[in-house]
Image 1 (cartoon, rainbow over the protein chains, first blue to last red):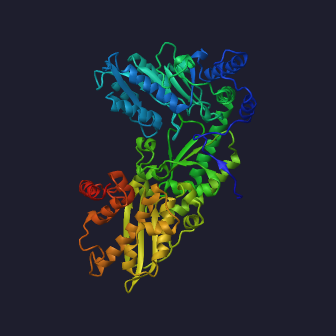
Image 2: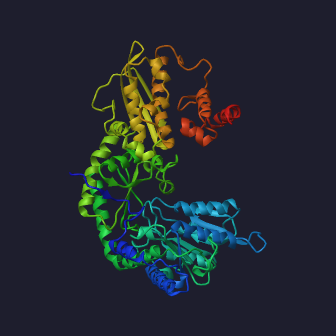
Image 3: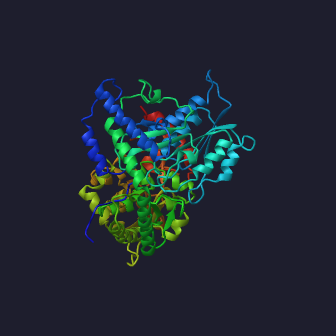
Length: 405
Length: 200
């Protein structure tokens, strides 16, 4: 097998679509500040508003004004939690009656750390656990929402990611939202990984806030969006000029926004075909690995899972060693192992599903995308077998024992 | 000092990762005189050393590991270095010696080289005990604090001298307390003592 470069880390980021790249390059001529009153400024502003409408369409938002542009998913998530910091305190800075935050143990670090900051500030914060496939327990959510059966008082915000970046598990946001709203809570969903892979409908889901990131849908980095239901309060994280309804100051990133709009439009157009193709590739990869490598565990939910994401544990072989062995063969993936994360902790997502460190340290995430072909999948399957075999032969722990660790 | 992934592609390290030396082959019969295992799959790495010793010299060595690329490369290098050494010299090799031979280790990978060193010492300690000289190479007054990994108060002292100032940094440098964790209270006591003496 000749070496080829196979990028399977699309959940980390995506390359620009050709149309998006071309449109952005051409748009570099439009340099005016989109807040300026003169003709050049108004022309720039027109492009911003057209892009806004396309992003709104991607998530089923009827009014484009419900979308504000940010610097990315992290900023959008921080904006929501920062707003809760204010909503949880009254005019004199004393704690409000309604200030409990419910989120999950598998959120992206920007949500986890934003929630932890609120906990440090004295907010009651609950991190819902997940089952072995990464789904939250609706009965547990119901209990936590009820001030009579749980601590912390009335709930201010429920924040649950629509789909998980590591294991791909999709949550039932519509059902979660219904339960949360019945308890009087606001609902936020981090939809960064869901966008472009599954259908998003903010009306059907009933969310108050939704986070999006452009570089996950074949658009540029450095631009994201926050959907806000009409009537909910959003506090500015970035203060200054009057842009974005006074909620997010800063000169418009003309080209980033244009790229986002086009990427969103194309993601919506291609959604069904893309998801179908990804699902077939995922099955091919999963079945191929299962047929050629013994003792594996597929993480995440079997059906409620992103069509492009496959997370597999190879007990007895360590994640970073697997990742680098694959990298030497041109295959680019990511791992839940501690060694590759820079900390001494393995993936918090995998640990939350209860797999245990033996399986968490030996996990690899394959996230496929527009550029992935069947040949790529077959190449990966072919290269994986000898790699796992070599590492397992070298290992002090046999795979069966590692799986139980 | 190069960063984690650039380092991994230095020719020496790449060679030791892709063609590690002296890995134990399950099909090979390797009669050995000493064996040491440290680490735990729960923390993401475990290392085993097997030594053939003759006249207190290391004649041959084999090892196995559940560990990352850095751990594999470090241990491969270490296994080459100790062949032919007296067990006393092999015992006193410091992880930094190995890191230097590999061209330097990024900060967050130093603990990977520590594990191989500890497994080697555990093997030699076992041999010394077997041959009636238990604890012969530990300093007269060195006290083992972490039993799982054979880490002494001298090791903690050295780590603090090298800059460790809190529990996380001490763990990064020595891996202490990463197996059963029972040593933590005493280890932290010593840590604070040494930081008091050596901390700026």
